[in-house]
Amino acid sequence: MKISPSILKIILFTGLLALLSCEKPDINDDPLFAGQLLTNSSDTILIDSHKYFLETELSRNLMPGGSLPTKRKLVAYISLVNTDSLPVSLNILLTKLYVINDSSVWTSVPHEYTSLDLPAYKLTSVSTDGPEWATDIYVNVIAEVTDNLTGKKMLIKKLNQRIEALF
Image 1 (spheres, rainbow, N blue to C red):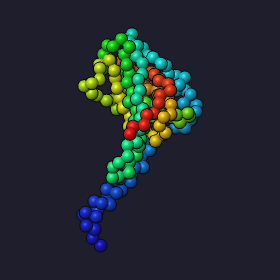
Image 2: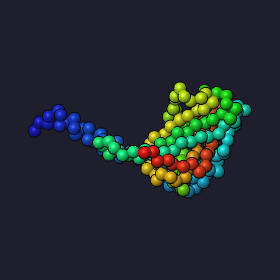
Image 3: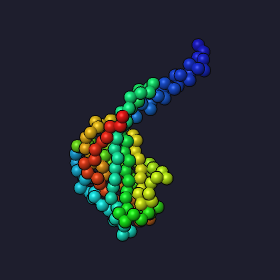
Image 4: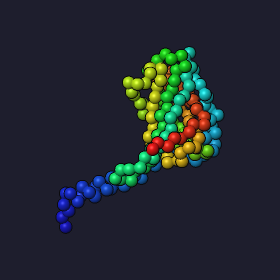
C-alpha cells in the first residue's frame, strides 16, 4: 500500500501537534520547596553597590477566537530594576523564574526581552510557558539573578502579585 505525500504530511503534522500539545509547564507541588524559596529570597538585592528590586506582570490571554484550540498559558514578564536609574550591568542575568501559588511552584528559564521602549536601568525577561492557573489570584514571584562576573546567584522576590486576565 502506497501512502500519498499529502496524507503523509498530514499524519506527520498531526503527530507533531499532538507532541507539542502534551508539553506541560514544570510545576512542583512541594510546600517545603516553596517555603525555602520565600525564606532564601529578599525584596531587594545589592550588586556592585547598586540596589535592585523586582517588577512583575503576570497574565493569561483569554481572548476568544482562532480556528485551533489553544492553550491559555500564564505569561510572566519580570524586570530587575536599578533603584538609582543607572544602566543594569551587562554581567547580570535573570536566570530562573519561580511563581508560587500556595504550595505549587512553576519553575521556568526566562528569555531576555528587548525593546527600544525599555529603559537601560531595567533588565526584563519573559516566560510564556506557564500553567493555566486561575486569573484574579495572587501569587509570589521569585527570580534568580546571576552575576556572571562573580558567578554569584541571588534570589529576589515580589509578593502578592495578581494574575491578570487579558481579553
